[in-house]
Length: 238
Image 1: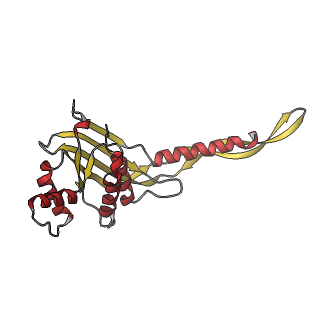
Image 2 (image 1 turned 180 degrees about the horizontal axis):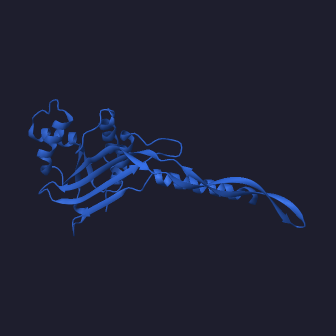
């Protein structure tokens, strides 16, 4: 066991360092209104994902995929939250039922606008999700000497005879300058009072993910989905 443990540990350490660099921890900021008791909230309108940035033409399914992940982490996880989550369609159809007026065909944006208009009569709070950063950045790595390891057989005098042991020997190798693609995305969540539009809770999750050990940086579509899921899981439930 001792003959192979050293090179194995070295390989695992290198793998851990590489993966850690490729998937940096997200930067998170959070706001909570002082003294506000979240248990006062009974119903929440979940608005569709909004965008403060342009979506690259190379990501034709980003908007659809982001909305799907947002719904999966909110509307389809009712049991996770202590308050009832309602979609824009739920709120608009309820308003139409009360008024006796038919809903008619509406686009997603029209549903969102109408739901916002009548939200104060139906819910306690409104939850927004906004993509604020969405880009592929390039990180330039200058040339540098890095420590590598090679496994060699080394004779060792032990118990009155020579034994051959495999050991990991460090050496320096020059790594040429290189550019790494970094997928950059950020999402902002905001929970406002439906009655007076007071901000009750807010958070921002900013994440960069580079190349993995055996793969390139993730696509913007996949990355934004992951950031949305990370942000949604941080929504306070008590």
